[in-house]
Amino acid sequence: MTRSNTFNWGGGIVLTFILFAGFIGTMVYRMVSQRVDLVADNYYQQEVVYQQQIERIKNTSRLNQKNIMTYSETNNTVRIALPTYIQKGEVTFFRPSDKNLDFSVPVTSQSNSLLTIPTNNLKKGLWKVQATWTDGREEYYLEDEIMVK
Image (cartoon, rainbow, N blue to C red; front, side, top):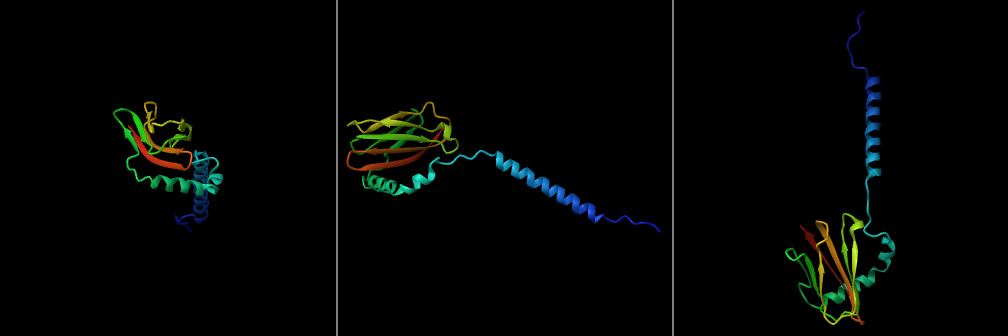
């Protein structure tokens, strides 16, 4: 009697399970080693007070002024023409891809509401510029995106 060359199903199933386990192990390793930055560390606390943010955005939209924030690639500056007197405020440069590059520029009391912020030292790529300020009565919020080249 001769034995024919048939496929060994037991060995094939074991090999399939080993390959599948290796694939799953590789995917788990890659997912665990991937860096994930949250938009904010205190995300849930910020969510609770988001109604105040909605009011700031409404106050800014009532100002009916267009082109409040402009980016000049040739001058490497962001110009923000705030339509109200500034008692205090802050301009935050937020880098979605790397939170370590985020920084804020405080805005102090001034009657001239035209802010010019140099962008020479910004890393190339997408930035979100977030401005918050108060005139003593109302709080305002403005956000725009710039692409530094």
